[in-house]
Length: 492
Image: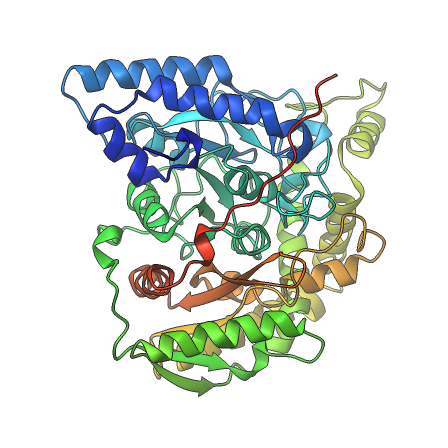
């Protein structure tokens, strides 16, 4: 075996461990050493659980020695720090939860642990998942492994950077408006956003409850399909989780797209896009056509309304969800004299500027006299966006478009212009508003050697066709095989 252990995919690592080529402890140690070598510069992790990981790996080896097996037995993954992990701090990238240790584990994480996962640690995120660059973390900015002066995307930037830099075999993220697909595109990996309700949200600290969905960041499509199969399914702890049967998603992975109707929405190729992005995405679509897919021009006419709709609905839900951080029940408390002063000081210190901005936007939209004009109207237009997709999927099986208008931008480049930052999500937020599924797969690089992602969108519960299309494209191209070479930590 010529690959370093940390370079392996989930399916390759499992096959090698089952053959006895190395142990889970050896694989975990290799990744922990990789984290030690690189994470001082990449800054993907908020918490590294080295002792716990080695204990879990040793337990996995003991099980395997007894002839036991499990879908993830001994595979080291990383978890975005908005998912609760019993006994391990869960900060949501916020000072207000800096020392919070949950008494329970999120269902998605628990299902991975039941399948034999080894948890390497918790990854950095924009505070409460509010951001597109991971610059809004209350602790530090994660850096893109392809260029350490650029953002990895957000809000799951820590998870994406960890996978791209090979500091984890794969990772969990969350996607409220593009927070899995955008960092996957910027970091040159696979990012899967499942349909709303496909994976339980129990234990996911809420940002926008009607939009949030646990997602997957992986090195290839097969790994994403494997993790989805493990995590999907109804959870009695989450009333929004779906009771639909869970297919074995890896069975959908075939190298054939003959006869598939792929929609190309004119609204997703806009003026001002980075030319290299449009060129790469159109080339990817042409490649799928050469494999036997049929390209169908379509229109999603309400796409231009998605951004204002999202930035009314999401902040409104956030303002309600974040009201619980009052300096009394859990999290940071300023310890001020009166209840109201303690509330003001605790939230004033604990929340960063972007979270405060969205709380204020959302509270305003929900306030008396403005609810009908803003929040209710946004929900009505949201229905129109959903209907656009439903009509489109009567004509096509999957929709292809860019993930983002540009490749990764420089750290600090958009920090003083929130509106320009929000535009990074212009092609991703529609899926969350409509509850659809989507995936980002690498489809090229720009002149600065920065990755470009192809977004494939499926109907609600259409993960199988999305994974099939992504897998067929991946198997006949080599973009996903390229890896960055970030500089190691300088030793003093």
